[in-house]
Length: 426
Image 1 (tube, rainbow, N blue to C red):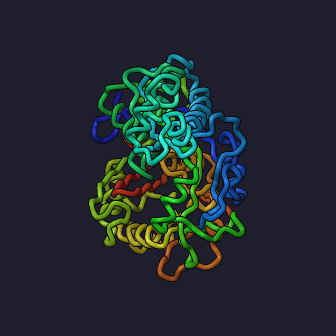
Image 2: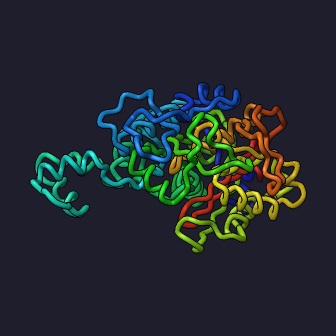
C-alpha cells in the first residue's frame, strides 16, 4: 500500500490518458510532430472580417465543421475531441467514467451576430441592454440560443457523454484555467473523493469582440506579417500574445486504482502550486512574488527541490511584461541554475489558448517526458539581454527529462504551477 502513497500519505496521482487538439492538428501524434518540428499553427483569420482590426492573426482551429460557429459550441467540440482521445487511451468505457469531471471553459458572452438576431426579433430599434438580450433569448424560439451561452452547459453535455460521476465542475481562472482543472482533479483524488478524474481545458473563443477587447488592453501582437512570426516569447522584439484555440484532456487516477485495473501509466502529477495575486485586474505583480510562491509550492508539494526539475514549460505569452516577470520569478526560485535549466514556450507555435492553455501545455509536458525531446521556442532570433534563460531556440532539443514544471499565470492574479514526473515520488 505504501508504494501508492506520497510522502504526505496521500494517494499518488497517475495520468492514464491524454488527448489534445490545437491549430497544429487533431490528436497527440499530429500535434507532437508539428510542435517538435517547430511548425506554427498561427495564420490569418478567415472566419470573420478583420478589416479595421489591429490584429488579424490567430491560432484558430479551422478544420472542424462546427455550426453555429460560436464560442460555446466550438469549445464543446474541441473538448469532446480531446476527451474522446484521452478516455480511449485510458481504456475507460465511454459513458461510464469512474470519476469526476472538471472543465475549464471560457467565460464567453453572447456574440455580436446572435445579439443582432435577438435585437431584430425583439423589435428594438435603439440600444438594447445585455440583460434584455438574455431575457429575450430565454423565451420561445430562442431558448436553445440562450442555453448555448450558459456557463455550465458545456460541462453538462460532456458529463452526459462520458458518464462522469457527481456534479460536473465548470471553472474559469483566466489563463490558468486548464491547470486549475488538473489541480482540482488531483485534489479530489488525494482527498479520497474519487478514484479518477477527467480534467479538461478548452477554448474556442477567437471572435472579433475578443480581439478588440484584448487589443484595448494592448495585449495582442500587431506584427501580422508573417503570421507565424508574431509570437516570439522571451525575445527582445516581442510585442504581445497571439490568440489561439484548442483543448486538452487528462485522465487522472489514483495510482493504486490504475495499477489494479492494468492501465498504462503515462506519468504522474506530483505537485500543484497556486497563489492569488490581487495586484491588478490584468497586470502581474512587478516583484513576481505570487508566481514565485506558486512555483515553490508546486515543487514542495511534489516532495522535490528546485534542483530536481529538468525542464520548464513556460507560460511564455510573448508580452513584454509577462515574459520579464516569469524570467525574474524563475531566477528567484532556481537561482543561478536557471541559466542551465531548459525552458521553452509552446505558445510560440499555437498561440495563447487562454482557458485551455494549462491543460494543453500539461499534455505537451508529459509528452516531453515520454519522448525525452524538448519542443523549441520558435522565432527566437533576437534574445532579450534582460532575460538570461536557457531558452530552447527554434529547434527541438533532445535531453533526458523526467521532471517538468509547467507554469500558468493568468489575468486577475491567477497563478498555477504543476510538476509532472516520469516516476512516482513517494
